Amino acid sequence: MILDFFLWPFLLPLIALFIYCVWRKRSALQISGLILLSGICIVGVYWPLISMDFFPFNYIIIKFLLFVFVPILLLKILLKKQFRDILISNGLQKKGMKNSVFLFLIFLPIMLIFSGALVYLSGNSVQGALDAGVISFFESFTEEFYFRGLLFLVLIAYIDVRVAYVVSITSFVLVHPQHLTSFFILSTIVQGILTLEIVRRSNNLVGAWLLHGANRIFLLLILPFLFG
Figure: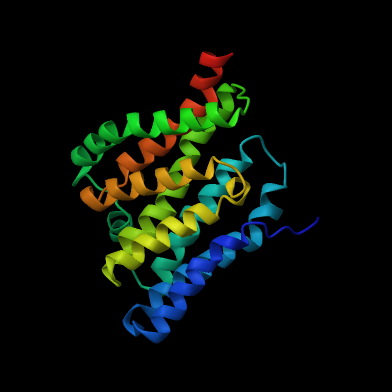
């Protein structure tokens, strides 16, 4: 099996965060080290695991393992947090859910118009796939849990919100290296900003997940139907 660490760029903001905490914010050194450790785990084993075609839905299972289960495990072991507290600190709670969903509805047209325009202007062809669309919707939760939950909602309890904001957005953008050389990177940036604004204003992850998932459904199922 050939090792491929193509997600390595997303480690750069996490390394920068750790160095910043060593230099300026030692009280956040433990959480920044935990985040860096989780990132190294993702980069190190993502491709080997994703290449193992041992059952049809291995992709979504592996994403849940790396982006959700590993952070929860590290938070529990290293920070001695209870499972319920971990979920709440990552924005999985009833509190703020209505506001989160409301913000999702407000931002949804902006996200879809922006994504659709970029696909149209770039001249990319789109092909519909129902199974890929459904899997992608649920899999989008994993990235929200990690980038908007751990790297923002959890992090702001230890560090300045502006630092957490930059770390969350830059790491989210860089974990999609396939977009770095295309116009679609702009959609990734906009999605990162809108989903962050949802969790910042509501402390709830639901609306961010819905926005991320809805954008994927739009790109994988609705656009192919409209342009097919």
